[in-house]
Length: 455
Image 1: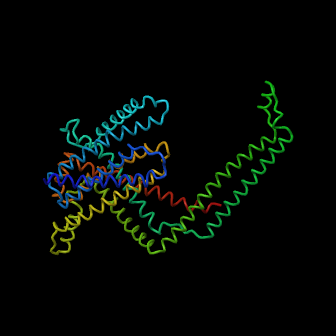
Image 2: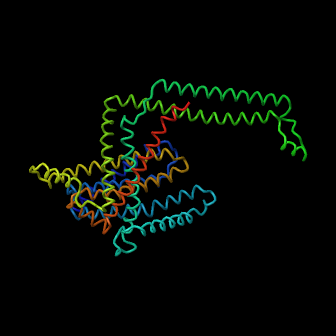
Image 3: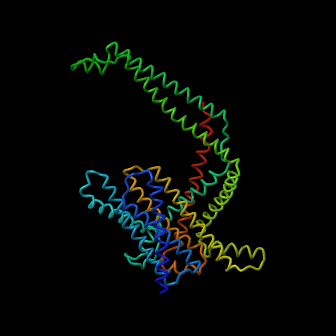
């Protein structure tokens, strides 16, 4: 009886998650598109529902909600379904919609879709060869084989996003990195833009006058005919046509310059708005957050470097370790186990909420940046694939943030994976991503003032 009640709770929550994913698909991703593929919408919503259910089960583990056997069953079932979607269903439909957009392959799209899926499976399986991701005793069809490979892709994606976000967040929020833009700078750039536009207009007028003069003189219609006429037209040209070619080249260069000036003007206006915003209470709050995240970024890069150099992986969760250090340093009586459980629950909850929110915002921006009416179905399925792999990998990494007594079922469900490898791999990719982002933003920030100061 308790299993039925527990299952009804899980099914109800999955229906709610499915509905939220459906609304997000309709209201955010596809609100500007008329044609919607029903199967794409269902796959995206189902992937979102089962991804969120994994996070729900993590919270249930900490709060001891539901029976232990019920949680284990739903963990196992949830992982099997999400792996079935990520490894078999989504890649097949991605290939199907890619082939459907090619007219020559339209009649045999099912055959070519299967070929694309088999190609994906080959590379997906070969992905696990260079990495020590699981124990060698597992069979080729075991669930650990799939989780381990999905985990490599997802952890790589998480580390790339985390490394860039750890650097870009303080750079975006802190007013220290804002350039000093005045009204005089904007007016000077606008004046240059107007002068360039005037030059383009005058040169186009000159081209029109030249064409009119050539037309009146008959240079347009009285073209030489015959073989010798063709040779003559190649070896000689009228002065007016040469002038037109030169003027057209000048116009093309000026139009490119005008586009750059327009973008720089818009950038100056945006920077000036950010300067005004930084003076408000909300702006000062985000500026404080920027300093906080900059400290976090430095600490994270330092710890990732230490972990890589000394091949170190934490055995206890960070909250318990932090409380133990604080208690030993201050010498006060403190129930470490009790408070570590509650603070770990709050921390994991914050990680889950921010992960879901941040990923949805990133997916929305990415979709609007590259989607079109023909490619939108493929892109949504790719986003569903990324989302599922991201959340599966989050479970692998969040496990370390939980006290030992809450990891038991999660460890049993995930199997004998090499969890230490995933944490080391995350540190390596995070460090590369963060340092690359620092270099990129440094060069961009250094070049920006020089660009605006150019005459």
